[in-house]
Image (cartoon, rainbow, N blue to C red; front, side):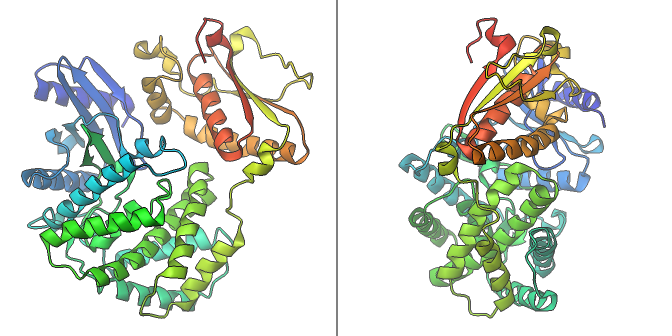
Length: 482
């Protein structure tokens, strides 16, 4: 279905709910799924509209939401739905996720963030135990429980999308035997509560200081440990081990109020579930990163490997899984996923100059005397400047950013740009060169090229730490402050 058609259907649903058509409808940043989200508002009313062509997934989400809300659990209200057209409206919880706190935290884990995480794990325990009671698991999709079949699917994704693509050899039969043995062990834990399945910081909104959970449509019956493992060992969070243990104990204190729990046994299974969650993540990183070459997934691999290394060195499981441990150690010891040496890059001479410009005004001059560098043409990308709401905005405004992420091929384009430019940066660092220039041009130098230049600057700074000179030529000529 076209974006215009989706917007029309959501607008009609909003008008039926609010009694007035939306005055504003803006695309929100896309998720990793095929779901499409918009923010719709009119007067004092605002809602998030969703379109998802997968009807079974919609039924699961709406059923869970209504059930959880009836129990006073922290999930969004459902305002309206039209399952025949695959759309629904839910409460607008704002734009602040727990993930947005993480990307601002710096190199240490501050106490205010620990306090937020404590609230999150408390509410998670209630969602799993209280939310799981009397829940209609028949609507779960694709399976009603995180059973052995589900685990083997994750194991096989790990095997074929990570180990194979990372060129880590394995004994197929020995590894298969270990995987069956490990799954049988995991299923001895209490698996009769609600399992969120993808409990990570992007799915936790923070509103008025309180966490609210979203995107649990993949939930099913399963072990309590899985969601906690997903949260506490999310690579981007990089939570210190002593704080992980503090949060684990805080979660168990809450759980004690809700159900009987053997804390020692819970912790034993917890680290086993951390391991299977990491293997599931490796499969995703392999497919999205090593196969599709999406940089953001590749960057998560070293963090996940460090978690696995800690597990192998510190956790004890009462089963033998020698081939599984061997291939995990081989991945750790390969060092192929270690990030570029930033110390080496910082001690070099390289400055990367990144410009956005308008092709109508000509390509930028190169003051270094080397005759220029990369020039990328963004004009083939769907232009938000053609639409009235975006005409006075730039590539740094939220509406334009979400438009480019959701309604264009910008993300795929930038993935290709990163692969090309990274090779140049690394080569120039090795050869002690001083200048590299990258230019992004579009029609007006206002939307697409500005966004692309900002993204590349952030990417190079984060990956290499070299000096960046960023210039938005057309915008700065208007006295726009960069």
